[in-house]
Image (cartoon, rainbow, N blue to C red; front, side, top):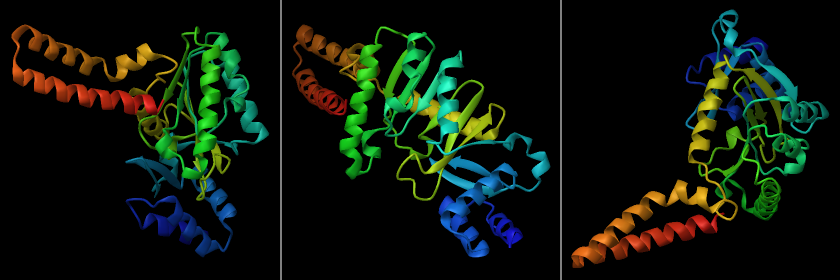
Length: 286
């Protein structure tokens, strides 16, 4: 039966999503969803399958030659809220000397017990929070509470330039609860009901792992487009969002003043309206 699972996955060279693989495991092995999720993780550890991230979607593909797939080695740490995972997390916050990126879900900073000590030790730390549009409606109130806690943490430590707090502008739940460093990544492989970060298993992969490369690319894209909070750091926010449009607007207005051109007045009025909407929309979400 176990061979049937692998063969059925292998028969789909483009890969299968998590639900499809769990369904195959359930049908072939007659086990519940929790056991099926653990079986899926074992397939990853044994290098029988590999995880591919494509267009923000997770897909699993069968590997043909496990012995040649050395870059697929992973280490299972455990459930995100397990004592082992939290202990390793908080030890890393204190000891890792280089830039450390946390891509968090709707998770309180209280979970990261040593993060404030890390910041005050002037160790580079970047925290990327989820966009509000990524959160289910019933969790919005809780989301707002968590955002407030992160803002308060930043407010207490705003004079430490080593701490960067950003909010995603892109939606991608697959990378939430990820720690990324220059040497390794810790990733939450969630189960098929990912309503909370508690539902999943944290794995660790080294930099030479193909999965590290995939996650690093996605995280770096999120960092590039992520925004600081206007209420916390208005100067950085303006530089990243409206500085260029603002300069263009000033040029148009200047041209109108000096040359008194009616068509420039119309353009500048339209431009002012668009810019005003951008500012209002950005401020509303921060």
